[in-house]
Image: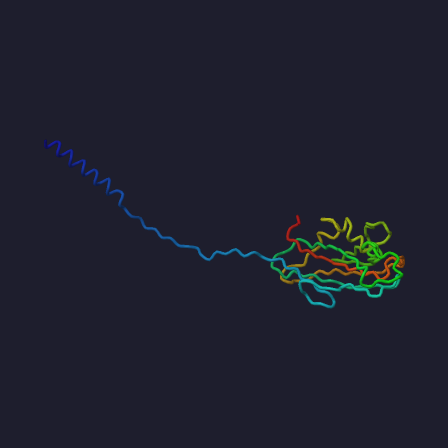
Length: 214
């Protein structure tokens, strides 16, 4: 009997010890890192010309009115700045144009439905400089007429991705310095009556690209 009581007491004591083993406490302390934010940088291309300051676009940089074949010409430039905070890899230039046959109709116009390229190929580019490189001195005659003109700029290799007007040196961010496109145009003497009274409008699109793959 006493033996059974002793075993019971030992069993109860052992259970009490095991239960007590789980009640120990250890110190700990937690702190929080808060206010973490992730702000994207910017590429912000601004353009200017001789008549307008830096902004999101300029107009009428190169204008020739009342053009005379073999006589009329114009020279002007467009400057580019990166007002953003991110370094750009390169600039890409794109040229496009449209023709207006209806605003100034004349009887002597022998082709009232001429294509835009008919007039564009008569506007020769005598100089076109970007970052010290004059594209007019070693041009590709894309349309095969013997001179470098506005139509050439809308054709490969000038219009193609990775072509001659892609991968140009980009201006530095936060408006540190600029790059300029300088261009001189001349109305060829070969222009005939088929483009009398026509108005050609050219657009130059400048794209600031972050990565070389773009």
